[in-house]
Length: 523
Image 1 (cartoon, rainbow, N blue to C red):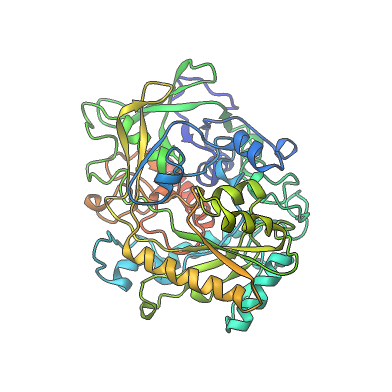
Image 2: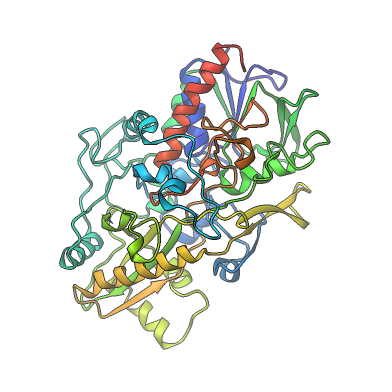
């Protein structure tokens, strides 16, 4: 049966979202001959239309629907309506991501076992492990063209990397290179090699960076088994009298509502919108929201321990030239509690343009210290710090009691407080990051607070037991057999690594499971 599909066709799998999880899953299912309708809240932008200018690009791609924030995190004060910079478009945040693709370390699948009882942390072992995930990581790396895997060479290092590399080596760090990046270092999969233009966060105008917008989605559509509906903002998920999911209601570009029937529904709207959708789909049978018998929907929100260090040197660096994040120091990724915290972190090259540097270097700052830093922009080098943060039940996405969106539904409130472990890790990372630059003659260094753009994880976490989470080891909700979570919200813990590779690997694995369930008559 070729796409498009009828609204009443209840044989289709409905996938909500087309990013790393949803876009990959939709293609994988289509390749298996399974009928799929993918609903994307945003429009479709392709490389020729991306804007290599930070502010206009942000306006083109960002999810700007109303949100609120609370908690002690600085983002709630500096950017109260923007808890996260994610993309509202076909491809989701794979349009905006930097390309870093790292496997979890073995211990990170079982952190409750390895870290023990950390006061205030809601730690839980994943119901899957490194050995089970290894073949899916391999498939994901091959699909995405990840450098330094499958014989694919690494990307070249720009000046920003060379500065970081020189400082790292002077400090005695051993593991520093241009990273495992899902950005073509040579022509591959019908796409050109990286042209070193920069603006990786604004969408790759050459298509060298892997994005579901122009890899998975077109391949899925080519099968005749995938229909992608753009500007289809999902409002609620419906269920039948037996409690099985039966369809979704969404609003089109003009605000008209439609109902698409479904065999199963896979939610991949990111860690803010996915729990919000489940909570907004409450009914008399599920008064606390779908799949929420545990009360864990929306809880355990994680965004990684993040921060940045920038440094000004006597001579120009021009950090913006070349791939944005092709540079990594991995020595601190290990779990070494002697440093004063559990878990580990990475230092990754990062450059942002003048507008974002002015906004993020020290939000709200002014005066000579700030202006002289901006004057030194051409001579600036930068790195991003990213590490494992602790899940906490109190860090959560909930429905705002009063504020409604353009469709009359409660907006999400994102509450976050740093755990003491997060703070200890960030302080250690700030110190080491500054030391890297000081070792090669930095004139000034600037520890920079976490940005609103980061990794959104948890809120529908995997758990072995239904009481502890929302989904099982396949991303299938404990409560409703034909309802799945297919994005980073299913993460039990965050690990230190950038999450996209793991989201893709989990989506490939989930597609296999769904196909098996269909073949067995269980779906």
